[in-house]
Length: 105
Image (cartoon, rainbow, N blue to C red):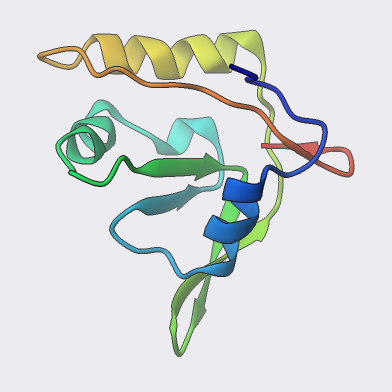
């Protein structure tokens, strides 16, 4: 399975157009996530997605996302994976990186 995209995947294009709801969460950077977030999403029946490098914009229709990009290094990916492994029981996650111009997220 492909884990790095030079553009936006179709899934991301669809998610960013919707407001932040039960199956998608926007985080400005990797530091904005903790193990509790991963547990909540793991217990969801919908297979949820957390988008890093996306700001929340409050509108009358909920919180929409705006790409701001963030540093997605091997170390930051490892940080996310470690948080998932420290959950009890460990949470299985998949990390994908995508690009919009020069901004990775």
